[in-house]
Length: 367
Ligand SMILES: NC(=O)c1ccc[n+]([C@@H]2O[C@H](COP(=O)([O-])OP(=O)(O)OC[C@H]3O[C@@H](n4cnc5c(N)ncnc54)[C@H](O)[C@@H]3O)[C@@H](O)[C@H]2O)c1
Ligand SMILES: [Zn+2]
Image 1 (cartoon, rainbow, N blue to C red):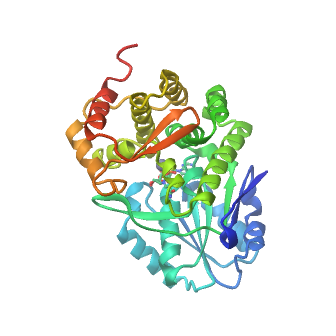
Image 2 (cartoon, protein in one colour):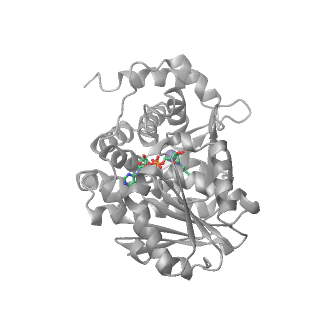
C-alpha cells in the first residue's frame, strides 16, 4: 500500500493506493473522521454500481455505517445541473445532515458530480473519493468539482477538497481497455509537465500498464497523484503553477465539445491536445526530441496522436474561443520546453493554433 499527503494546511488529506483497500474501507473512513452517526450517500454510475457497489456498501454497513446509494447513468451527460438537483433530492430523502458525507465511487464523472453535490449541499459537507478509473487519479485529487453547462464543460463548479482518497487497484481490473488507455493520457501528462524520468518509465512500462499489471499500475498512479498533489499544494486556486496541469486541455476540451462529448474520451482528446502543445513547443524553440518523445509515449499507451479528418478547423477554433482559459482576449497555452518542463505562454497567436489544428489532421502522414 502506498500513501501520500496532499499538503493544504488544515485541509490536508491522504491518498491511499493499494490492492483490496475497499475490503477495509470503513476503517479508513473512520480514521478520517467520517461519522457513523449521520447517514452517508454513495454516488456512483450504473456500470460501476453493477460491479463494485454491493460489496462496498455491504462492508460499510457491516461496520455500522448507515448508507444510501444513488446510481446515475454512466457518461459525461450525468454531469448536469438537473442531475445535481435529483441527487440533492436523494440526499434529503436519505436524511443527510451537516455531519454526513458523500462518497464518490467511480471515475471522474462521478467524482466531479458527487463532489459538487458535497460542495453545495447545506453549503458543503464532507466528501470521500473512491476512484475506479485510471483517469480519476487526476480528477480525484485537487478539489476541483463541477458539472457541465450545455455550452461549456466544467463551467459550474467549486473547489471542495475530499477528506481522503481511497484508491483500490483491484477495481481497475474491470475497466474497459479503451478507458485504460484514456486514463494513461493524464498519467503521461503528469510526467510531461514535471518529471522526465517518469516519462521514460511510462514508455518502458506502457505494455505492462495496458495489461493492468498491479505493480506498474500502483507505481504509475502513485507518481501521477504525487505530481498532482505537489502542484495543487503549491497553487490550490490556480493562480499560476496549477494551470500547467491543463497541458493539452485547451485543444482537448474544444475537441470534446465539438464531438458532442461522445466520440472522443477525455483522455483521447487530451492526447491529441498534448501533441498540439508539443507542436507549439517547436515554434517556441523546443527541440524535436520533445515532440518526438511526447508522440512516442502517447502512441505506446495506445492513444490517438492524430485528429480525425472530419473535425472542421473553424468549428474547433470557435469551440476554443469559449474555453474559460481565454482571459482578456488573449490565448493562453501550456507549452512544453523540455521533457518534464512546461511554460505558460499568455500570447499565443491564434493563427498558429489554427495551423496546428490543421496539422494535427495530417499527423503521421510523413511517416
Ligand atoms: N476535477 C478534475 O480535476 C478533473 C481532472 C480530469 C478529468 N476530470 C473529469 O473526469 C471526467 C472523466 O473521467 P473518467 O475518464 O474517469 O470517466 P467516467 O467517470 O465516465 O468513467 C469512464 C467509464 O468507465 C466506467 N467505469 C468506471 N470505473 C470502472 C471500473 N472499475 N470497471 C468498469 N467500468 C468502469 C464508467 O461507468 C464509465 O462508463 C471528465 O468529466 C473530466 O472533465 C476532472
Ligand atoms: Zn484532464
